[in-house]
Image (cartoon, rainbow over all chains, first blue to last red; front, side):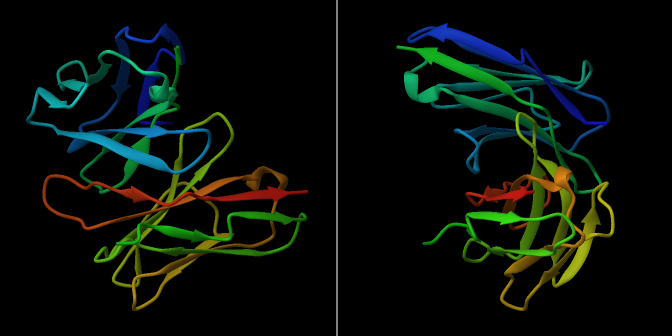
Length: 110
Length: 114
């Protein structure tokens, strides 16, 4: 079974609004990463948060990690049409595998 | 600095055939991982190569095999193709370091099995 599960599966918002995606996982992790994928192309790494970190920022991105709840959230502020993509969380366990969730499809309407 | 490159970009095969996909990692990266992504799903980990050895393997049958060359490039081989092998195959390279590992992905090879 997959380690990570994103929620919601699909999200549609107006340009300028904030988008929040959540990720839940099942086992202990070393780190959690968020990736973006445009139209079935290669994945682009957005941000990595380690298991001993609680929050991280990168530009318009904010990621939180709650290891007690085994969950993470990705917030994209002031969304743009170019943010339209699929977003995946990926967890790395002590066994060095990186396991991806099924993803959230984000549509930003101009 | 070239990123991760994969070839070919698209491929059409028939059931029972064999296929080889190729990946060149980002400059300086010594670890290559392969993923299979079916339509509408997240990437599934196939295996990872480091120092020309398979280091980790996901839940894929032995029909999936790989190789890493001394220059760190890698191949993914799939034998006896099934219709269900149709997917986007992604290669990612990285430099493992303690506490984290950012992977850089190639554009993928889209395989269609008829």
